[in-house]
Length: 475
Image (cartoon, rainbow, N blue to C red; front, side):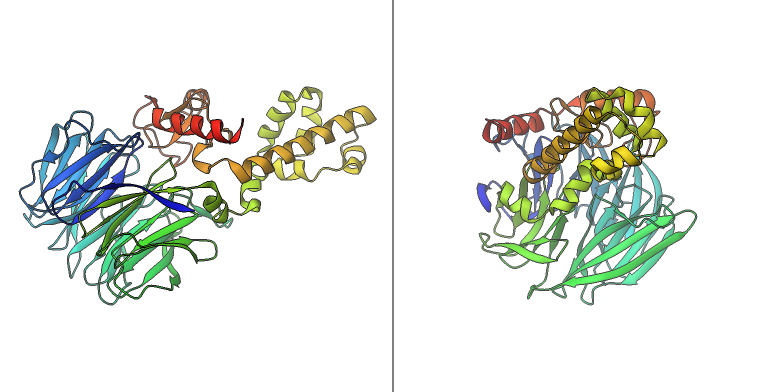
């Protein structure tokens, strides 16, 4: 089930955008303000609301680390805020002075894109607060923007219905008519879809528009093979303009907002899981929390609703096979060796390496294959290996049906005990990330980009959520 757990009604006009960091929720409105709330109890922070803009605030977004908030307005400015004290860090004026409709940080926090009503799009250097590159579309206002998860390109959407793709040097790679009556929002799934061909990664993109449609696209770009945008499908069920869409952190769900309602769609089958109808006017924005089971929706009714997803709903949006693969089939040979040592089977590491046993092969081992293929002569040793494999299968099956993906460390694939936030914006088990940084030359495990900083910040909100889950499910 999805239940409404809180309603925020502090804005005095339409809510235009909402965004999550690891510990905060930001909202902005036609009333010229940005408001900040703690995710622990949804109380407004002492330095909220943030006031600077002289006209409506159209968009707000957090940097991946959550330490900086960006907002943009009809007044032609994009403002950077310190989330800890609410102080302004920079005021960046759109070169043309045109109203700024959308802003988005790059995944590595080095750049911020801002799109304006006159069709101009600017990349700002977040460290120097100076203009880095500038471009423009042929027609219409820029009203939507999204960076690919690896940061190698970003997409803008215009009021004329065009999706335009730009690389990190601000070169236009592609432009395509996507929605007849104008685009309202576009959003990437943070989880890549692996094609398996030439080692390419493909990304899922959702776009929505005034034509009452939500479309799914598959996007790929490499410097070797170039760029490709493919239309995949159109989600049915919308009978009014769709003003917002957002993917869940694990990529399994997509939400879309229209007149008074929010659709929650299960991506793998494109079936509608839930319809949320508590808003009384058009839903203008929706956002999933990064590492908690929360959804925020904002509306022209001046409110922001906070929704809680339970495990039953998450299980609907996840197949057992996908999770078995996450925990076992994607193990490397090195992972299998580490597992053998942990089970007191260190003497078998050489045999398993010689036979290239990875996670998938490990799950398929039988009594016969251990004896005939791996030549393990000892009956007792074969029996011990089989018992350990069966324990692994049982444990993985239990984990896959219960533990939310948000609580699993991307490196160890285990429930996190001491989660920390890295500069790439993702959370990891502290010890695992420290080891990764020391051996992987400061690259992100999720994006493979160079980390802008090696500082790891404790994710107390996530740790509290994990502890609450443990108290409920592992008594």
